[in-house]
Every structure is written in C-alpha cells, then in structure tokens.
Image 1: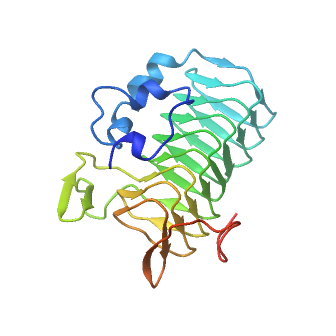
Image 2: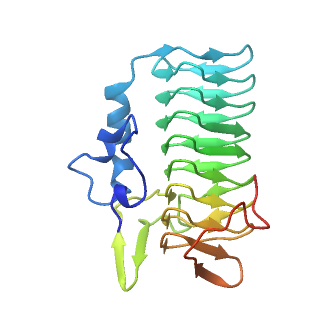
Length: 237
C-alpha cells in the first residue's frame, strides 16, 4: 500500500531505477536517495532554452531538449529538468530537484528536494518541499505541500491504527498519479494521496487517502467508484 508502485506508473519513467532501489521500503524513502541519485546522473548541459533574464546558479544543472526557462526564473543546482518542460517567470528551483518531461513549474512556484514525474503541473503560486508529485498531477493555484511540523519532530504517517516514523524531519506530500488539488490547498507534513484523489479548494488534508478519494473541507472523505468526466466544481487550474 505504501510502495512507490502503489502511487506511480513507473513503466515508462526515465528515472525508474531511483524508485526501485533496494533501500526503498516505503515511498518516502525515495527522497532520502535523491541527492545521491542527482550526483550520479547529472552531466551538466543545457539543451533547452534559457531566456535572457533567467538565472542559473551552479554548474550541476541539466536542462533537457525543448524545455524553456523564462525571464525571472532562478534555478540553483543540483537540478535535473527533463524535456519539454516550462520553468515560468518567477519560479524558484531551489536545489536537489528532479523534474520530469512535459512538466510546468509555474509563476511564483518554489520547489526544493522534490521529484515531479512526467506531465506534472504546479502552474501558479505553489510550494513543493520534500515531496513527490506523480504523473499527470495538477496543483490548483496556491497549493502548498508543507514539509515541517511546528515542533520540528520527525514526520509520522498514520495508516489505520499503525503509526510509522518516517525518520525524516522534513517530508511534504506524496501525490499519486492524476491527483488534483483545488486552489489554496495546504497539505500537512506527511500527507499521502493515492492515485486519482481529488482535493477541494481550501482543504488541509492529513494522513493517507486511498485511491479515488474526494477530500472536502467540511464533509471528510468520500471514496468514489467511477470518476465523472471533467473537473468537479470548485477545482482550480
């Protein structure tokens, strides 16, 4: 239930080996290996376009073909940006970041110690800290993946009556494939959303949610059997 393959389709993912490392027991263990993995794979090169007025700091950065870094964006290495990805004006890519293909790191979005799989979009005013964002995830404007408890203690994950200590002082959210969040969603540290979850705007999820859950700010969790076409009213872009 808490393995990487329970959250992500890795069959065509270029960095599958990171998730399949024998040291990975739970999905969040992948983040513990991110720095080492980036040091191993990054061959500094800019194949895409870095527009005038963008800032690239450090030499441990790879930007794939077809990707565009817009004016006012800042990328600080180590960072790996895949192909055909947009790093938009005002984005702050802040070290130890692995971004896949066809992604969007949007205006005023900050991302650090985070993995974005392919076609993941954080297009407006987002914060992604110590998190994993799955394939085809869309974060509504103002989504924040909070990564630090107020008391600074290790983040724990509750699954039924079981509480698992992640061993991590900083852990944001794990968002499975096709998760969508409404505007101004704020996930608590250690939130796990399995594939196809929807989070309504102005909601603060915590803990683990099974596949296909709909999380509302006042009525708790509803698990659906069939996804209706289109987005639910109140979802953000």
